[in-house]
Image (cartoon, rainbow, N blue to C red):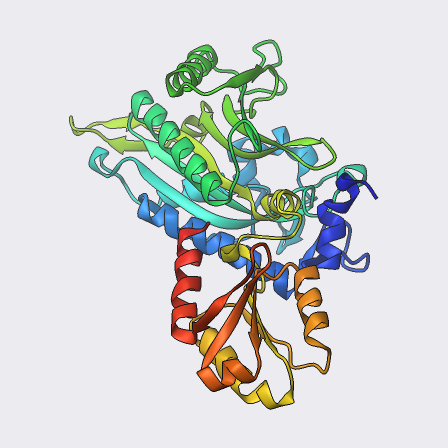
Length: 410
Protein backbone atom coordinates (compact mmCIF):
# COMPACT_ATOMS: atom_id res chain seq x y z
CA UNK A 1 0.00 0.00 0.00
CA UNK A 2 1.38 3.44 -0.97
CA UNK A 3 1.74 6.29 1.54
CA UNK A 4 -1.02 8.12 -0.38
CA UNK A 5 -3.46 5.25 0.14
CA UNK A 6 -2.32 4.73 3.75
CA UNK A 7 -2.88 8.39 4.70
CA UNK A 8 -6.16 8.86 2.82
CA UNK A 9 -8.62 10.40 5.28
CA UNK A 10 -11.41 8.06 4.17
CA UNK A 11 -9.34 5.00 5.13
CA UNK A 12 -8.03 6.54 8.37
CA UNK A 13 -11.48 7.85 9.29
CA UNK A 14 -12.85 4.33 9.11
CA UNK A 15 -9.91 2.69 10.94
CA UNK A 16 -9.86 5.29 13.74
CA UNK A 17 -13.64 5.45 14.13
CA UNK A 18 -13.96 9.13 13.21
CA UNK A 19 -16.88 9.19 10.76
CA UNK A 20 -19.31 6.99 8.86
CA UNK A 21 -21.17 7.46 5.59
CA UNK A 22 -24.32 5.38 5.31
CA UNK A 23 -26.13 4.78 2.01
CA UNK A 24 -29.47 4.76 3.84
CA UNK A 25 -28.77 8.25 5.21
CA UNK A 26 -27.49 9.45 1.83
CA UNK A 27 -24.41 10.12 -0.26
CA UNK A 28 -22.32 13.07 0.81
CA UNK A 29 -23.92 13.16 4.27
CA UNK A 30 -21.19 12.00 6.68
CA UNK A 31 -22.00 11.28 10.32
CA UNK A 32 -19.32 11.95 12.92
CA UNK A 33 -18.73 9.18 15.45
CA UNK A 34 -17.85 10.15 19.05
CA UNK A 35 -14.12 10.48 18.27
CA UNK A 36 -14.76 12.57 15.17
CA UNK A 37 -17.24 14.67 17.12
CA UNK A 38 -14.52 15.39 19.72
CA UNK A 39 -12.27 16.83 16.99
CA UNK A 40 -15.10 18.94 15.62
CA UNK A 41 -15.94 20.30 19.09
CA UNK A 42 -12.31 21.35 19.61
CA UNK A 43 -12.16 23.10 16.24
CA UNK A 44 -15.46 24.90 16.84
CA UNK A 45 -14.59 25.99 20.39
CA UNK A 46 -11.16 27.15 19.26
CA UNK A 47 -12.38 29.31 16.38
CA UNK A 48 -15.46 30.72 18.14
CA UNK A 49 -13.41 31.73 21.20
CA UNK A 50 -10.70 33.26 19.01
CA UNK A 51 -13.18 35.18 16.88
CA UNK A 52 -14.98 36.58 19.93
CA UNK A 53 -11.58 37.81 21.21
CA UNK A 54 -11.18 39.60 17.88
CA UNK A 55 -14.50 41.41 18.03
CA UNK A 56 -16.83 39.04 16.18
CA UNK A 57 -20.46 38.80 17.31
CA UNK A 58 -21.55 35.16 17.07
CA UNK A 59 -25.16 34.42 16.15
CA UNK A 60 -27.43 31.48 15.26
CA UNK A 61 -29.71 31.60 12.23
CA UNK A 62 -32.12 29.02 10.71
CA UNK A 63 -31.09 26.26 8.30
CA UNK A 64 -33.91 27.24 5.92
CA UNK A 65 -35.35 30.48 4.61
CA UNK A 66 -37.95 31.67 2.12
CA UNK A 67 -36.90 31.39 -1.51
CA UNK A 68 -37.55 35.14 -1.79
CA UNK A 69 -34.50 35.78 0.42
CA UNK A 70 -32.19 34.05 -2.09
CA UNK A 71 -33.82 35.86 -5.00
CA UNK A 72 -33.13 39.11 -3.16
CA UNK A 73 -29.46 38.16 -2.64
CA UNK A 74 -29.04 36.93 -6.21
CA UNK A 75 -27.93 33.46 -5.14
CA UNK A 76 -31.06 32.30 -6.92
CA UNK A 77 -30.63 31.93 -9.89
CA UNK A 78 -26.80 32.54 -9.86
CA UNK A 79 -26.24 29.65 -7.42
CA UNK A 80 -29.29 27.59 -8.34
CA UNK A 81 -27.36 24.54 -9.59
CA UNK A 82 -25.75 24.15 -6.15
CA UNK A 83 -29.00 24.58 -4.20
CA UNK A 84 -31.55 21.96 -3.26
CA UNK A 85 -35.06 22.12 -4.71
CA UNK A 86 -37.56 24.41 -2.98
CA UNK A 87 -39.67 22.99 -0.14
CA UNK A 88 -43.33 24.05 -0.19
CA UNK A 89 -44.75 24.91 3.26
CA UNK A 90 -48.14 26.61 3.67
CA UNK A 91 -48.11 27.68 0.02
CA UNK A 92 -44.68 29.33 0.43
CA UNK A 93 -41.38 28.11 -1.02
CA UNK A 94 -38.41 27.59 1.32
CA UNK A 95 -34.81 26.59 0.62
CA UNK A 96 -32.19 24.71 2.60
CA UNK A 97 -29.56 27.40 2.90
CA UNK A 98 -26.30 27.11 0.93
CA UNK A 99 -24.79 30.13 2.74
CA UNK A 100 -25.53 32.49 5.65
CA UNK A 101 -24.93 35.92 4.14
CA UNK A 102 -28.61 36.73 3.43
CA UNK A 103 -29.53 35.78 7.01
CA UNK A 104 -26.75 37.94 8.44
CA UNK A 105 -27.72 40.90 6.28
CA UNK A 106 -31.32 40.64 7.48
CA UNK A 107 -30.01 40.66 11.07
CA UNK A 108 -28.04 43.82 10.30
CA UNK A 109 -31.20 45.40 8.87
CA UNK A 110 -33.19 44.65 12.04
CA UNK A 111 -32.21 48.07 13.42
CA UNK A 112 -30.44 51.28 12.26
CA UNK A 113 -26.67 51.57 12.71
CA UNK A 114 -24.30 54.48 13.28
CA UNK A 115 -20.85 54.83 11.72
CA UNK A 116 -19.49 54.55 15.28
CA UNK A 117 -20.62 50.88 15.45
CA UNK A 118 -18.82 49.81 12.30
CA UNK A 119 -17.15 47.55 11.46
CA UNK A 120 -19.76 45.04 12.66
CA UNK A 121 -18.50 41.46 12.37
CA UNK A 122 -21.39 38.95 12.33
CA UNK A 123 -20.15 35.35 12.66
CA UNK A 124 -21.65 31.88 12.85
CA UNK A 125 -20.58 28.24 12.68
CA UNK A 126 -23.44 27.42 10.36
CA UNK A 127 -24.89 24.23 8.93
CA UNK A 128 -25.11 24.60 5.14
CA UNK A 129 -26.47 22.44 2.34
CA UNK A 130 -25.11 22.37 -1.19
CA UNK A 131 -25.74 19.96 -4.02
CA UNK A 132 -22.52 18.29 -5.16
CA UNK A 133 -22.68 15.87 -8.09
CA UNK A 134 -22.24 12.22 -7.09
CA UNK A 135 -18.91 11.95 -8.92
CA UNK A 136 -17.49 14.87 -6.92
CA UNK A 137 -18.38 13.51 -3.46
CA UNK A 138 -15.38 12.38 -1.40
CA UNK A 139 -15.31 11.49 2.30
CA UNK A 140 -15.36 14.65 4.43
CA UNK A 141 -13.74 16.78 1.75
CA UNK A 142 -16.64 17.03 -0.70
CA UNK A 143 -20.01 16.71 0.98
CA UNK A 144 -23.61 17.87 0.66
CA UNK A 145 -24.04 19.05 4.25
CA UNK A 146 -21.33 20.81 6.26
CA UNK A 147 -20.62 23.38 8.98
CA UNK A 148 -18.88 26.58 7.86
CA UNK A 149 -16.98 29.02 10.08
CA UNK A 150 -18.64 31.95 8.34
CA UNK A 151 -18.70 35.71 8.92
CA UNK A 152 -19.82 38.93 7.25
CA UNK A 153 -18.22 42.26 8.09
CA UNK A 154 -20.13 45.49 7.50
CA UNK A 155 -17.78 48.45 6.96
CA UNK A 156 -18.07 52.23 6.58
CA UNK A 157 -15.65 52.57 3.66
CA UNK A 158 -13.58 50.85 1.03
CA UNK A 159 -10.47 51.51 3.13
CA UNK A 160 -12.01 49.92 6.22
CA UNK A 161 -13.09 46.90 4.15
CA UNK A 162 -9.53 46.36 2.91
CA UNK A 163 -8.25 46.72 6.49
CA UNK A 164 -10.77 44.09 7.64
CA UNK A 165 -9.68 41.74 4.84
CA UNK A 166 -6.12 42.07 6.15
CA UNK A 167 -7.30 41.30 9.69
CA UNK A 168 -9.23 38.27 8.40
CA UNK A 169 -6.04 37.00 6.76
CA UNK A 170 -4.19 37.54 10.05
CA UNK A 171 -6.81 35.38 11.78
CA UNK A 172 -6.52 32.68 9.10
CA UNK A 173 -2.73 32.60 9.39
CA UNK A 174 -2.95 32.44 13.19
CA UNK A 175 -5.48 29.60 13.04
CA UNK A 176 -3.36 27.74 10.50
CA UNK A 177 -0.36 28.07 12.81
CA UNK A 178 -2.35 26.54 15.69
CA UNK A 179 -3.41 23.70 13.37
CA UNK A 180 0.22 23.09 12.41
CA UNK A 181 -0.27 24.23 8.79
CA UNK A 182 2.61 26.10 7.13
CA UNK A 183 2.26 28.63 4.33
CA UNK A 184 3.92 27.43 1.13
CA UNK A 185 3.98 23.85 2.35
CA UNK A 186 0.42 23.06 3.47
CA UNK A 187 -1.42 25.97 1.88
CA UNK A 188 -0.99 28.77 -0.64
CA UNK A 189 -2.79 31.99 -1.59
CA UNK A 190 -4.79 32.55 -4.77
CA UNK A 191 -6.29 35.85 -5.89
CA UNK A 192 -9.51 34.79 -7.65
CA UNK A 193 -10.66 37.24 -10.30
CA UNK A 194 -13.87 37.70 -12.26
CA UNK A 195 -14.50 38.00 -16.00
CA UNK A 196 -15.99 41.27 -17.19
CA UNK A 197 -17.26 39.57 -20.37
CA UNK A 198 -19.30 36.96 -18.48
CA UNK A 199 -22.38 38.89 -17.34
CA UNK A 200 -24.29 35.65 -16.84
CA UNK A 201 -21.89 34.31 -14.20
CA UNK A 202 -20.86 37.57 -12.50
CA UNK A 203 -22.74 40.53 -11.06
CA UNK A 204 -22.32 43.47 -13.43
CA UNK A 205 -20.66 46.38 -11.64
CA UNK A 206 -18.11 48.98 -12.68
CA UNK A 207 -16.21 48.43 -9.43
CA UNK A 208 -14.74 45.02 -10.35
CA UNK A 209 -11.38 46.30 -11.58
CA UNK A 210 -10.84 48.57 -8.59
CA UNK A 211 -11.83 45.81 -6.13
CA UNK A 212 -9.38 43.38 -7.75
CA UNK A 213 -6.64 46.02 -7.63
CA UNK A 214 -7.32 46.63 -3.92
CA UNK A 215 -6.93 42.91 -3.12
CA UNK A 216 -3.83 42.66 -5.33
CA UNK A 217 -2.17 45.59 -3.56
CA UNK A 218 -3.07 44.16 -0.15
CA UNK A 219 -1.41 40.84 -1.00
CA UNK A 220 1.70 42.63 -2.29
CA UNK A 221 1.95 44.66 0.93
CA UNK A 222 1.74 41.45 2.95
CA UNK A 223 4.78 40.20 0.99
CA UNK A 224 3.39 36.70 0.55
CA UNK A 225 3.45 34.60 -2.60
CA UNK A 226 0.15 34.36 -4.46
CA UNK A 227 -1.06 33.46 -7.91
CA UNK A 228 -3.90 35.05 -9.85
CA UNK A 229 -6.72 32.97 -11.31
CA UNK A 230 -9.24 34.41 -13.75
CA UNK A 231 -12.87 33.30 -13.63
CA UNK A 232 -12.61 31.92 -10.05
CA UNK A 233 -14.28 34.83 -8.21
CA UNK A 234 -17.61 34.72 -6.39
CA UNK A 235 -20.48 36.01 -8.51
CA UNK A 236 -20.60 39.17 -6.36
CA UNK A 237 -16.89 40.03 -6.21
CA UNK A 238 -13.20 39.02 -6.21
CA UNK A 239 -11.71 36.98 -3.40
CA UNK A 240 -8.52 35.75 -1.77
CA UNK A 241 -8.59 31.96 -1.50
CA UNK A 242 -6.45 29.72 0.69
CA UNK A 243 -5.78 26.59 -1.34
CA UNK A 244 -4.85 23.14 0.02
CA UNK A 245 -4.18 19.77 -1.58
CA UNK A 246 -5.25 16.38 -0.28
CA UNK A 247 -2.95 13.32 -0.31
CA UNK A 248 -4.14 12.48 -3.84
CA UNK A 249 -2.99 15.87 -5.11
CA UNK A 250 -6.47 17.32 -5.64
CA UNK A 251 -6.66 20.97 -4.70
CA UNK A 252 -9.61 22.68 -3.01
CA UNK A 253 -10.32 26.09 -1.52
CA UNK A 254 -10.06 25.61 2.23
CA UNK A 255 -10.78 29.17 3.45
CA UNK A 256 -11.69 32.39 1.65
CA UNK A 257 -12.01 36.17 2.08
CA UNK A 258 -14.28 37.98 -0.37
CA UNK A 259 -14.98 41.58 -1.37
CA UNK A 260 -18.69 42.08 -2.10
CA UNK A 261 -19.78 44.47 -4.86
CA UNK A 262 -23.37 43.25 -4.97
CA UNK A 263 -25.06 42.56 -1.62
CA UNK A 264 -24.79 46.07 -0.09
CA UNK A 265 -26.91 47.34 -2.98
CA UNK A 266 -29.34 44.42 -3.15
CA UNK A 267 -30.01 44.58 0.61
CA UNK A 268 -29.67 48.37 0.87
CA UNK A 269 -27.12 48.01 3.67
CA UNK A 270 -26.61 51.50 5.07
CA UNK A 271 -25.43 53.35 8.17
CA UNK A 272 -25.89 56.86 9.56
CA UNK A 273 -22.71 58.83 8.97
CA UNK A 274 -21.04 61.56 11.00
CA UNK A 275 -23.01 64.06 8.92
CA UNK A 276 -26.33 62.54 10.08
CA UNK A 277 -27.07 61.23 6.59
CA UNK A 278 -27.53 57.68 5.29
CA UNK A 279 -24.52 56.14 3.54
CA UNK A 280 -24.01 52.83 1.71
CA UNK A 281 -22.00 50.21 3.62
CA UNK A 282 -19.22 47.96 2.30
CA UNK A 283 -19.18 44.21 2.91
CA UNK A 284 -16.52 41.53 3.39
CA UNK A 285 -17.33 37.80 3.50
CA UNK A 286 -14.80 35.50 5.16
CA UNK A 287 -14.35 31.98 6.45
CA UNK A 288 -11.64 31.54 9.06
CA UNK A 289 -11.13 27.75 9.15
CA UNK A 290 -13.56 26.97 6.34
CA UNK A 291 -15.88 24.00 6.40
CA UNK A 292 -15.22 21.99 9.57
CA UNK A 293 -15.57 18.72 7.65
CA UNK A 294 -13.08 19.77 4.98
CA UNK A 295 -10.43 21.02 7.40
CA UNK A 296 -10.87 17.78 9.36
CA UNK A 297 -10.14 15.83 6.16
CA UNK A 298 -6.95 17.86 5.55
CA UNK A 299 -5.82 17.45 9.18
CA UNK A 300 -6.48 13.69 9.24
CA UNK A 301 -4.22 13.34 6.19
CA UNK A 302 -1.56 15.81 7.37
CA UNK A 303 -1.12 14.01 10.69
CA UNK A 304 -1.97 10.53 9.34
CA UNK A 305 -4.45 10.37 12.24
CA UNK A 306 -1.78 11.11 14.89
CA UNK A 307 -3.21 14.47 15.96
CA UNK A 308 -1.50 16.90 18.33
CA UNK A 309 -2.69 16.52 21.92
CA UNK A 310 -5.28 19.34 21.84
CA UNK A 311 -7.07 17.81 18.84
CA UNK A 312 -6.70 14.12 19.68
CA UNK A 313 -10.08 12.40 20.23
CA UNK A 314 -8.49 10.38 23.06
CA UNK A 315 -5.65 12.27 24.73
CA UNK A 316 -4.59 9.73 27.35
CA UNK A 317 -5.14 6.03 27.92
CA UNK A 318 -4.63 4.56 31.39
CA UNK A 319 -3.05 1.07 31.30
CA UNK A 320 -3.12 -0.96 34.55
CA UNK A 321 -0.80 -3.96 34.29
CA UNK A 322 -2.97 -6.33 36.31
CA UNK A 323 -6.22 -6.62 38.21
CA UNK A 324 -4.58 -5.49 41.46
CA UNK A 325 -3.88 -2.13 39.83
CA UNK A 326 -7.42 -1.46 38.57
CA UNK A 327 -8.63 0.55 41.58
CA UNK A 328 -5.75 3.03 41.50
CA UNK A 329 -5.98 3.20 37.69
CA UNK A 330 -9.65 4.13 37.93
CA UNK A 331 -8.85 6.84 40.51
CA UNK A 332 -6.29 8.32 38.06
CA UNK A 333 -8.81 8.03 35.21
CA UNK A 334 -11.46 9.92 37.21
CA UNK A 335 -9.01 12.69 38.17
CA UNK A 336 -8.05 13.29 34.55
CA UNK A 337 -11.66 13.16 33.42
CA UNK A 338 -12.59 15.77 36.06
CA UNK A 339 -10.00 18.09 34.47
CA UNK A 340 -11.68 17.75 31.04
CA UNK A 341 -8.87 15.63 29.65
CA UNK A 342 -10.18 13.08 27.14
CA UNK A 343 -9.09 9.84 28.80
CA UNK A 344 -9.84 6.13 28.45
CA UNK A 345 -9.18 3.25 30.85
CA UNK A 346 -8.04 -0.06 29.35
CA UNK A 347 -8.93 -2.57 32.08
CA UNK A 348 -9.00 -5.52 29.68
CA UNK A 349 -7.15 -8.77 30.42
CA UNK A 350 -4.63 -8.16 27.60
CA UNK A 351 -0.90 -8.04 28.33
CA UNK A 352 0.71 -4.63 28.88
CA UNK A 353 2.56 -4.98 25.58
CA UNK A 354 -0.71 -5.56 23.71
CA UNK A 355 -2.38 -2.62 25.48
CA UNK A 356 0.49 -0.32 24.47
CA UNK A 357 0.41 -1.59 20.86
CA UNK A 358 -3.36 -1.02 20.67
CA UNK A 359 -2.98 2.53 22.00
CA UNK A 360 -0.28 3.30 19.44
CA UNK A 361 -2.31 1.81 16.57
CA UNK A 362 -5.18 4.07 17.65
CA UNK A 363 -2.75 7.05 17.69
CA UNK A 364 -3.31 7.92 21.38
CA UNK A 365 -0.69 10.59 22.31
CA UNK A 366 -0.01 9.46 25.90
CA UNK A 367 -0.24 6.20 27.83
CA UNK A 368 -0.12 5.92 31.63
CA UNK A 369 1.32 2.62 32.83
CA UNK A 370 0.29 1.59 36.35
CA UNK A 371 1.88 -1.34 38.19
CA UNK A 372 3.03 -2.19 41.71
CA UNK A 373 5.63 0.58 41.87
CA UNK A 374 3.19 3.26 40.66
CA UNK A 375 0.50 2.20 43.14
CA UNK A 376 3.06 2.13 45.97
CA UNK A 377 4.48 5.58 45.09
CA UNK A 378 1.09 7.13 44.20
CA UNK A 379 2.49 8.03 40.77
CA UNK A 380 2.15 7.06 37.10
CA UNK A 381 4.68 6.15 34.40
CA UNK A 382 4.09 8.29 31.31
CA UNK A 383 4.77 6.90 27.84
CA UNK A 384 4.49 9.06 24.73
CA UNK A 385 3.33 8.02 21.27
CA UNK A 386 6.44 9.66 19.78
CA UNK A 387 9.04 10.11 22.51
CA UNK A 388 8.76 6.81 24.39
CA UNK A 389 8.92 6.45 28.17
CA UNK A 390 9.24 9.40 30.58
CA UNK A 391 10.05 9.34 34.28
CA UNK A 392 7.36 8.64 36.85
CA UNK A 393 5.11 11.60 37.66
CA UNK A 394 2.68 12.52 40.39
CA UNK A 395 -0.87 12.75 39.05
CA UNK A 396 -1.12 16.50 39.75
CA UNK A 397 2.19 17.06 37.95
CA UNK A 398 0.92 15.02 35.00
CA UNK A 399 -2.33 17.01 34.82
CA UNK A 400 -0.39 20.29 34.85
CA UNK A 401 1.88 19.06 32.02
CA UNK A 402 -1.04 17.88 29.86
CA UNK A 403 -3.10 21.04 30.38
CA UNK A 404 -0.13 23.25 29.45
CA UNK A 405 0.51 21.26 26.27
CA UNK A 406 -3.20 21.44 25.36
CA UNK A 407 -3.23 25.20 25.99
CA UNK A 408 -0.07 25.74 23.90
CA UNK A 409 -1.54 23.73 20.99
CA UNK A 410 1.89 22.28 20.24
